[in-house]
Image (cartoon, rainbow, N blue to C red; front, side):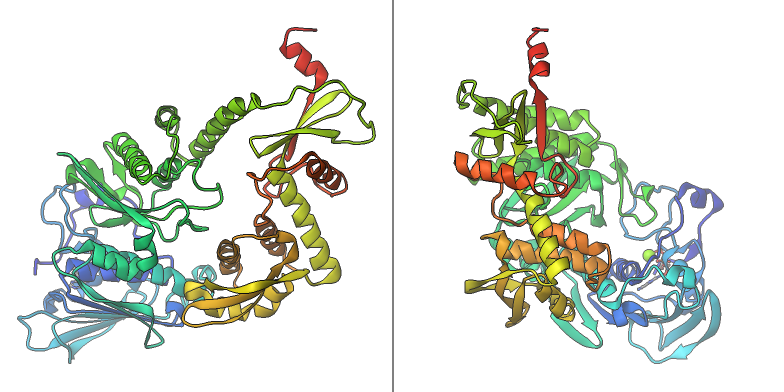
Length: 580
Ligand code: ADP
Ligand code: MG
């Protein structure tokens, strides 16, 4: 191995803020990255109590020479940076801070042996104090055990989530590391058992696709399209989910730049923009992207957890990614009109690419749609209008999305889905709080729903979920069988309904009817009513929606705080035409 040295002061100051260890998942990430840098073929990860009591990572890599074992725990001690050239880095670590940071918040045991050593050496340290260092049994490679993370640091311990939630974050890290490091065998154990198929066999010759199926599952493979691009400065390779294969979070999306898993909100915004108009605002596509750029064009030290990066040619990369995604969706016949593409791209380049940009894009698309459909609008004679009706009389529906109604002195545009959602929420609340059980409808054919690793979580909440009107029972593997859903929802997509519910429960761990979070859960359920935008309504149905709105509390805003209707005074309309 290369000698471990303390970095020079000069290099230290070039490197950004300290390594962030904020829970078991970041320990697992750092330890695995060290194993990968050490050229391990096998990496075994063990978690107990969600990593709160024990995290162990065993590898068969090059090991740490005994004379460097103690030094490896020191701050800024690394064997990976030999030149002063920070820009030309090919290893995952290089700042020499991870082991130091982990050792500062736990009890750590490192047992390691190189090929030159006749036996292993083991160091034990607690809160950075070395307790013992002695020869010990052990094969070639490194075994690191981290015990009782944050145990004596209550201020940080309190930010740890429950066992299940912490384990979920760790699984996510393991999956993503396995995705890119295709040649390494990864095995992941919880309470000494491999669960959820976390036994990833290495594949040779970077058979990315095979690994992709192992990690992302066959379902993703079936529902995704391949994208590929390269020029002299960069290479983009990836799989993008088709629009209907969407999820409630970005959790399954993985973006790697030069082998580093990055988390970059702006880039997610770009991806979402590429799916603009194809996926509802509250759902996310699933995308796996492997991007390679020349090392000199990248600065990985922007974020201490190395998940955000600064790229020289980010703008180019962003628009390339959008074009690639749009092109492949178009070729697959999944986009019928891409006439907005140019406008979309220029919007993206002009704005800051965050979520806001994304909303603006959706908005501009909608405007175009609205304008075209105005042609379909009926011409209406002036007729008697009931003055007592706040929302007037429905006149027409445009674009299967909006209702136009008329009162004596105004014209009202109603967002039919938003309005319906609010009505549904108020009804759900009424049932839930006043009758303490949401009215449910039995499904004629019960539906099998995949809940992935969340089975324990939802069975822990079964009574409360039943109270929400959803009846389910256990089914094979990672599935449950849903027998009944809230009656008011009509015919929603039940998988999406359950996905979203799980997402909410994961945040809180346990549903508590007395906690304000219940409102979010109910509002999430209300989103799944089947009278969405896109349904043709006749005049009678429109009017009955307006009447329901009038009698529903808070009906002027949808559950997300957006207006459900917009009122234009005739006077204002007149002034728009210069008639004052
Ligand atoms: P960095 O990875 O940035 O160099 P770390 O604190 O993560 O810093 O590790 C310090 C050093 O300890 C590494 O540079 C490497 O020499 C050694 N090391 C850590 N983990 C392993 C491992 N699993 N196998 C071999 N060497 C390791
Ligand atoms: Mg490291």
